[in-house]
Length: 177
Image (cartoon, rainbow, N blue to C red; front, side, top):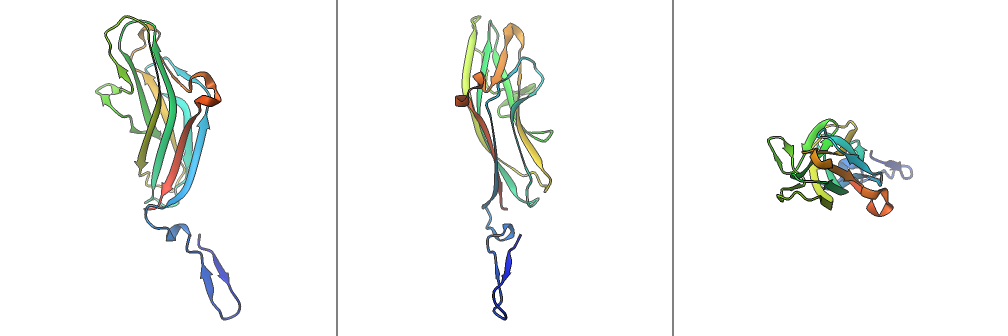
C-alpha cells in the first residue's frame, strides 16, 4: 500500500518508499506470534494437535514464511519398550516437516535403551523452517504429536505442568521474495 501525499500546488508528490512492494528481497513484511502454556497430553498413535498454532495471511504468493518454534515436550513410559514419539509441523492440513522418520512415521525423539525400567525424557523442541505457501489466503501452522508405541502407559506431553515458565511459542514471519 503506497502512501502518496500532495505537497503544495505544483511541487509534486512524495511516495512511501517502505511499502511492501518496495521492500528488498529478504525483508520481513510482517510478524505473527502465539504462545501457550496449556498442557496437552497424547496417549495414542493418532497425530493430535499440541496446542501450538498461529495463522498468517501472506501479502504476495511469491513470499516465503519463516517459522520459528520453541516448545516444551515431555515423553514417558512406565515399563519396557522403545520410547518413541512423532512430532510434525502442519500447514493447514498438509504435513511440511516431521524431522527424522522411518517407514511408519516421525521419530522425534526416539530412544531404544533395552531396559524394562520406567523412562522419562523432557526437552525443548526448537526449530526454524522456511516455507513457500504460494498463496495470499490465510494459512495456519501448527505442531502435532503422536506416540509410536502405546504399551506401558506411554505418553507425550506438550507444555508440561501448564506453568508460565514452560511457555511454548511459535513465530511466523513473512519474507519478501
